[in-house]
Image (cartoon, rainbow, N blue to C red; front, side, top):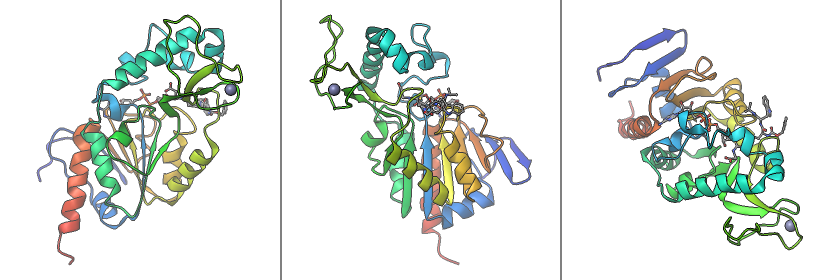
Amino acid sequence: MAINKFLFHAGRKFRILVSVMIEYPKEFIKMLKKANSVAVLTGAGISAESGVPTFRGKDGIWKNFSAEELATVDAFMNNPERVWEWYLWRRQVMSGVSPNPGHKALAEMEKLFDDFTLITQNVDGLHRQAGSNSILELHGNISLNKCLECSRPFAGEISLERGELPKCECGGKIRPDVVWFGEMLPRDIINKAFMASERAELFFSIGTSALVHPAASLPVTARQSGAYLVEVNLDPTPLSGFADLAIHGKAGEILPGIVKLINELRDEPKK
Ligand code: BV8
Ligand code: ZN
């Protein structure tokens, strides 16, 4: 398979600028063959090809507010209508999109490894729609609501037309069931994510700028625990220089090729 791209060789590290046919480093091929424990971290980039705006891309700003300004308890306490207006806009956007080949490839990849964990920062639910099962949603799910005070789930309808936002039985305000900046992640979910990262032999960081913590430290933990770390991202990130292999391009174009390669390697007659 001819390489028609640039291959930067720096010690063990490879950086590949993807165009079409790819020839991956031998070490990566070996890991695809022998790894049993695989973990994947995804961010907004994997949903970009489905039409979901990313956070730091040019479409990451909503009415001149950054996510960090809207996705906080303070922002909600100061102006719950504005925060709900943002979440209702995002819900409307997400209700009109569907999983892309990147999501579907990861759902396929799950079946190819005994121990596979998909850790996502995304609240769009597209991985589940694509058929993935072993998912850890670090930052919650945008289609769910809960009480700000007692955390009781709220199934009622949220509308800004009816003036008053709905209240919980306890009188508390209703908020989207996502993790806001400055809030701890669900303890059991983040613990499972770190354990999966520590035992992973192969770790993929896909479509994330690797800037938001503690999610951004999962690939680092995996690499420091001996995993072969692969980054699949449109642009370089702070993780690129740390990864064993950095593949820069669209997840929806790259991941199906990797799954196809794994199947080919599985069909190869054992030497
Ligand atoms: C916490 C839910 C305890 C809500 C979200 C340590 C160091 C520095 C700061 C901190 C730290 N520890 C804690 C912090 C503070 C903070 C933080 O990390 N701040 C950042 C901004 C520096 N973390 C927290 O507050 C966390 N809580 O730590 O609590 C605590 C509290 C205070 C102080 C200490 C400890 C809670 C974080 C969770 C916040 N909630 N979402 C909602 O969605 O409404 S975060 C939200 O933003 C997303 O979930 C996601 O995590 C993040 C966005 O990042 P990405 O997904 O990576 O998206 P981005 O747009 O940035 O990048 C997309 C990438 O895709 C790009 O690189 C692009 O090139 C690429 N791409 C685009 N298209 C494609 C593609 N790649 C492939 N294919 C394509 N087609
Ligand atoms: Zn309540």
